[in-house]
Length: 416
Image (cartoon, rainbow, N blue to C red; front, top):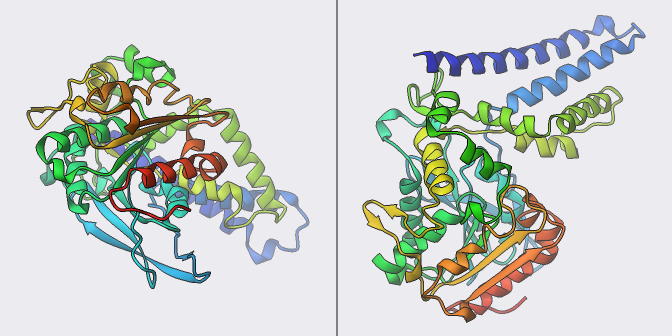
């Protein structure tokens, strides 16, 4: 019960701050105050506007915001988001471009379950949807999943990926970003043994911890310093009474967000102070750079306790993927069984989350794969987010990934 009280206390603090922001904005906006030449009222209204928006975003799932795409015919086509596979902990969705012929290049994006929604890959989707049929894993917020749905850990996550790949068929290219990289590699190896005909054409692994010890970071060091007992006692709570998943053990999104913010508190504090100043001076807008970034950054989701704890213990501490000893539903997965799926790794030279060396370790594990089907790329001057979003991705990495897909397609695709 104390864990539920702690969860509800965090939600109460968030709700209170949202209310304070709304109250400050409303009070400072009274028409009766319009005749008072006091800049304090403008600053009070600005503080209220920024505060209300920030704390409200913490419980809101961002919209994809992908409404149209300009195709090769020069016309804008409407984008429809359709659910292909619906499951309790996550769906497989498809971005269908109306009025366009189905593209031969079909891509499955495996989004991370690491505190943020799959919409974190919005720009990645936008860059691929122009000439690809894009599918993505859309993971659900654990607080909204009833306890009766059971557990969800790294083995369940891997099993979901296996099911999604089977549903899409073999003529797909899989791109995994960040946290799910090692589990996507395991899912592909599982298919190589259990259902070879369902294997994808290619597998692109972007900035993920296949071998966390290959190049230690603060993230991996934290995993080694803290015991599993300490993690469970300090990070795990039960969902409070407000949500459908009441009683489910989770790693709360609000607790994750506090950890994210604390790592760069000075930068975040300055960003919000500057935004308040811009709002007070009438220089801000609903979709300015600050709001575009923080609307996504502040939107956090709860992870199931089993998934979080098993990730730390099995991927980081025990290095089961790195040592090729990962087990799914009682079956020991052998990554060396991957022989037909081309594998490419992408790393950022300045990635301080999954440092260079952690992801490329996947190629050494693919002992049964011919060297001609292996590729790697190290993007200079790119950080963690830069390797799947932003200029480095658009200008340098995306073209290489597309070329890799084309070169390893069973169905011939016209080059760009």
